[in-house]
Length: 137
Image 1 (cartoon, rainbow, N blue to C red):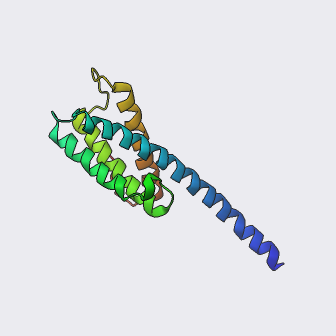
Image 2: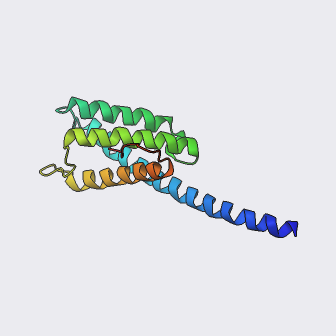
Image 3: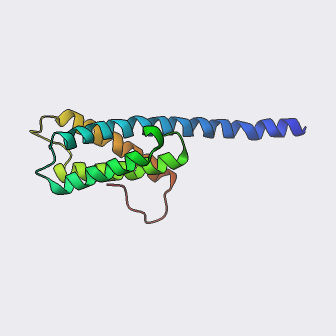
């Protein structure tokens, strides 16, 4: 009878582990897409006209370098990825507060990256909701 209890208890852990693995994989894709875009904008001086956006993009780089090997593989990496996506969203909002990026040469890429970063932030928000906590940027 004890064996059946262990099997029943193990099933939710497998489901939780699978959900966590999917969440980490989505965060990994988002983090790498975000950093690839921000790195290219920083390298091309695409943010030189917006110093606030440049500072937030640089902060995203600091967070990216804290993630081991640039891969989101653990809960610790995920927490850093959330901080990185927060800084990235702030950088993108400094470029265009509406996040539409009309007239920008990389408008589609910027919108896509903004959506990916927002997805990571919303997943984190849903995991750690507290009464009265504001929605992510």
